[in-house]
Image (tube, rainbow, N blue to C red):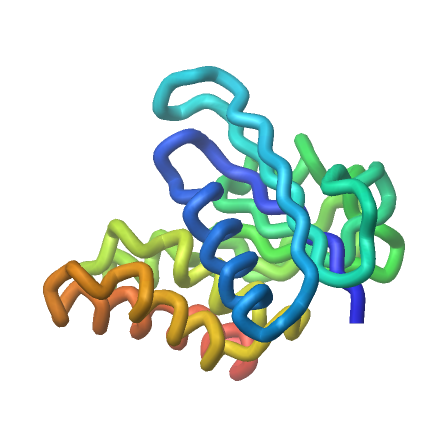
Length: 179
């Protein structure tokens, strides 16, 4: 299956990290992957957007109206990059609002900030969002992403690795359960 994914946020939120994590997990599943990113301002807080294509594609850039999945780590980015989403695509937005719409009901809210604060895990907001995104559109299995976290974090403390995996799982379960 082919997937086109837009991930958008601000510098320092881990947009590029979760893009690479998902890309590596898909590549380890023997899938063809292309990525491209725009860093926006070269400082923390500037807009960052990444394009990720999984499947049989020749170009890494996603045209407006073509993305299957849009992940917005900041609620403001929903309106900013919503035009990339195709009519049958889904968006997941880090927001406290129960259901978001940007002219349609294709945007799902996941309050990753709240979950991270509740779990005392503020550095993993992006992983809560990635878990939720995978629950919406199964680009690859959550198990492949967990394995990639273990690989990427091999030199980090075991507790840090466990918190990263827990964030991914909790984001996934929150979307699956509808809570």
